[in-house]
Length: 205
Image (cartoon, rainbow, N blue to C red; front, side, top):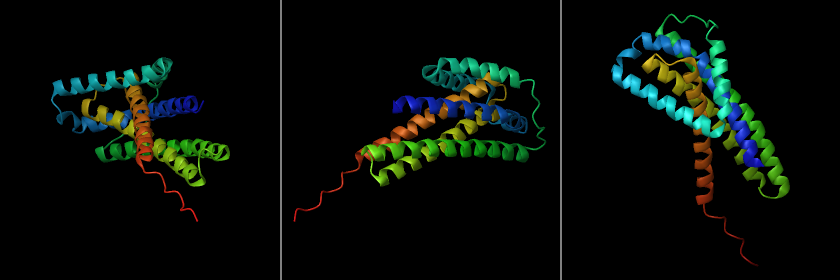
């Protein structure tokens, strides 16, 4: 049941990262025009586009196939929406950073709330101590913030280096990267906790 709740929440946060990545697309394209196009050869740009898009699409498709359809619909609708014009590379970078930070804050707040609720329930069931429940909430908050921000930054970076990514691909990269990052970070923390030696039992009197 908890895994199902985790999966549903991760999908919601991944979709949020995809939408935020799309919002940063115009600024990322400005970075590409300001010099990002010169970082990689044309062949490398095409290869990077292909790898990132296929990897992200595969990640999203494995988690929730319908999310790709929703992302494509939202991205197509967003194509007609004109975002603020970015005039300099510095302004573009600042806009991307703000977008990633805002997405990270939402990820932190949402996952902190759910992590705290899960910790309280586990504490009441006796499967977590008070300290473990607090650590659980902190880990969820931190991984939520990191994964959503990373999703936005990777998608924006892909546009800044390759330029020609379509809106659905940008959303897929943002969503897929956020999902993969969240899963990877969660597994890392779980593995680290499992590898720690158990606390010694108190000596018998």
